[in-house]
Length: 110
Length: 113
Image 1 (cartoon, rainbow over the protein chains, first blue to last red):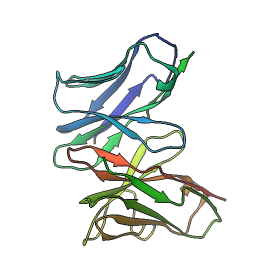
Image 2 (cartoon, chains in turn orange, yellow):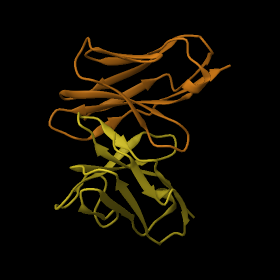
Image 3 (cartoon, chains in turn cyan, orange):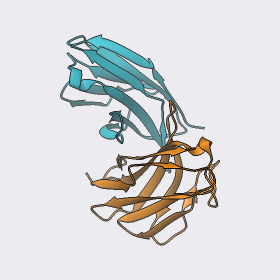
Image 4 (cartoon, chains in turn purple, cyan):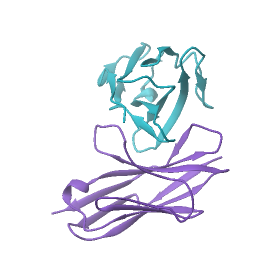
């Protein structure tokens, strides 16, 4: 069974303090690993797809990286508007289903 | 990315009743998905709905409890039947993108008393 574990559960940072969120996964064969951002009361917003180990994607202050066992979401010099829950999900080969982790609730303090 | 809307955005229902949630997409899509997000838990796939065929349900979810319709390529409904307080959750629909990603609607927050 595919599994996704995210850590930490919650993270509080000062504005400008860089850090990383972790997503560890087990999957029968990785078709894709996805990062989403979810604001309170809203649906998940798609950020990145990673397909193979060594791949990196960047968007503004966010950079996602992938190894064979985990993915990291690096946030550089975060701003208060980056506060949200960040979700990681995996998709197995031959399957459309996304298996999600429970997320990391990120709070950036001005 | 597709623009997805859901109705209602939230509802409070009595035990034993049923609620139908609508999901509308602004473009034609092949696959639509229904997820549940219980408080403090991750999103869990309920079923996959393709137009013109029966929905495919994940383990632990049955058609009698969560009947789904998919009448065309832009619309789907999920019904939560004979509700109990354990059905209190956020229900989300999603659609497949050009890659393997999925795009999500804003969700329906359901409270069952």
